[in-house]
Amino acid sequence: MKIYFLIIFVLLCANVQGQWVIKHLDIPEGIGQVIKFKNDTIGLLMGRNDYLLKTENTGESWNRIPFDNELFITDFQFVGDSSVVAIGYNNSGNNFISELLRSNDLGVTWTTISSFKEQQFSSIHFSNIDSGFIAGRNSIYHTTNAGIIWDTVTSVTDFGYEVGDFIELAFPSKKVGYAIAQGFHQRNGIVINSILFKSVDAGNTWDTLKTFSNHLASIQFVSKDTGFIGGDNSLIYKTQDGGETWNTKHITKPIHAITSMHFTSNNTGYVSGHPSLFIPEGPPPYFIAKTIDGGDTWTTLDTIGITINDIHFINDKLGFVAGNLMLIMKTNGIIDKLPENYPWHLIKDPNHLEENIVQKRQVLVSPNPTTGILSIQNLESSKKIMALSIYNTSGQKIKIAKPFYHQSIINVNIEDFELGLFILKIELSNRIEFIKIIKN
Image 1 (tube, rainbow, N blue to C red):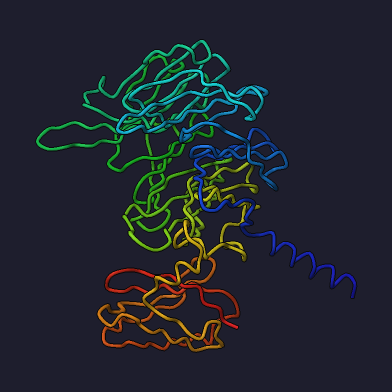
Image 2 (image 1 turned 30 degrees about the horizontal axis):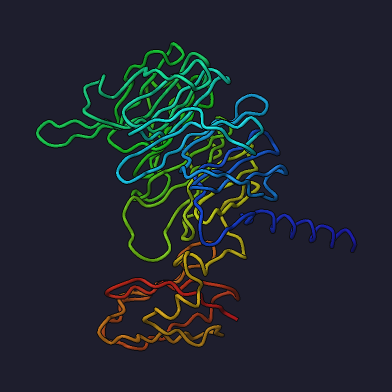
């Protein structure tokens, strides 16, 4: 009997651990843009303005470090034993000013090394403390003296484009490097190309390797031959011959765009993203996906909630996502369920508490909590309820109701639902509202 209860206990613990767990959340400010780990224990999260979080216990707790800087950090990298380099920008009026920062104590204190007017950078790569690259608007720059002096090594204008942006760099070896970019030129209208560049001489010269019809957002090589690119239309591109040929695979719905990607091996990888369509109201949708067969098939969490901006995994079964409100969630590799304590009351409007949102609602839902029947009353007769849908806490749509154009009160039966929290989405003719409902 003792063995039986021990087995049950272990299974329950495994079930609890086998999902996302919230490790940090700030209200109402902060955007966590980039999360990275130096090793199994030390990690940083950087983003907007004075927000910098550090962990020294594998992400179990995160401490805020004073960061007296008005930059929006777009990328950073651990270099050597104790250094971190970061790039960010400050938009003062219509003028971008970017800066390169360095910390020599793993993110505790920072010094500005270089400043760039009218420039915005998005990616950084240092092979050692002295030699590094930064990429951004139009060009890739190189330094050999720890970032004090920079030289332009290539520009999209060298390849016939009027203007463009380098999005991300990847160096699988000291000699071989890749860069994804967008180039714009005008020939009987505006033409936009997404371009893959390659260097075989340690970044000194670059050549066009391939153009893509979709916008590209992330690139990673796990070996000298095997690499992945993520972009719009939920497409993952994979090469196994150093970028000469690429195979494509859809991860989720075609309207989704991949924004962040991290492969821990040739077979195991994780991506995150969101719809490329503008959604004016309501909590933003996003997705997290996982592959264990090199991108051939994917398991996907397609949900709504606080915006996710970056994903990083220490190994195949230990990883993190970071996003707005400085949200950090940790997982042991299982991605198909959000935490039970997910802050649903914040996803409508991060700058207001839930009770302030309730005062603005056009509908009244009662009783809530309910044992089975929800009564949904339209408080504005001039506005019509177009559709109703209900999501579980994993973000999965589990019930859909047809339009009710002429009804001011609508009853929805959820008697067959399990006990717990759900999200009711109400589509009105002038807006969309999301309301927490509880089945008890």
